[in-house]
Image 1 (tube, one colour):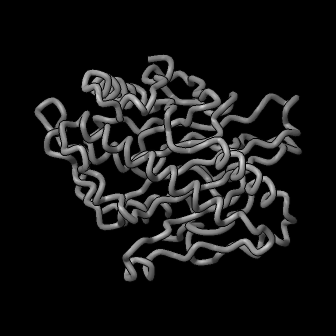
Image 2: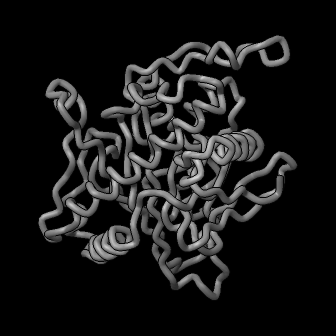
Length: 316
């Protein structure tokens, strides 16, 4: 598979069973073969998307002094602002050419969990930043819930299998700014080759070249969404949970041609995480003689902690 599939989420919601089943089949094949698909018919409307980009640009245009107020120490960058070059891919000691902001879960009806998750950080300088961020978070979370239901159907699980695991899950909405490149990057990339930690990622801002996916042949292929699409990919947690039946594919964001170094790029992924207590044990139906169990049992929270160490965001 040399191109990522382009699907319409409305087909999964169709009353026509054949249409729904065809969507499930194509989604499953895309995630099994290359781990990435492009989706239209999602819940993120143009108005909210435009408002979010406006707020995100306004935040990153603030001075470094102002932005630094929102660096929250001791949280492994789970909330607030992370400055340029702080994060690196697993196994890399060169920081990525990006800065970013994290929104976390807006907990509903679980006071005990509110005390476990860090609070979201309020940006005082931008009146609408946090409300628009929350609206976007909730729309992408709802879209992700439907995609996980389709994945559950593909795996012959109960359609709502993932619902309880992602309700008030530890998901993150990340607003990324890749600033203009002002000097030779010396092997640094906007985002070095990596796999995502979480269950699935829903990505805004993949229109145009930059995001590349490593296919089974070892070739890098462009993953480009149309204007009305978001990119969705499998993360390491779901790959592990399905015993590698669904692929967490290595991907990267390459630097632009030198003629475009003076331009910024904005990208907004929603990392859909489960609750910390979700077991990531391999699903029994994904284990057989040809595909023996490949991973030890682990909880999502423990797996996340280990990966944050790998990223240099937590000290071992």
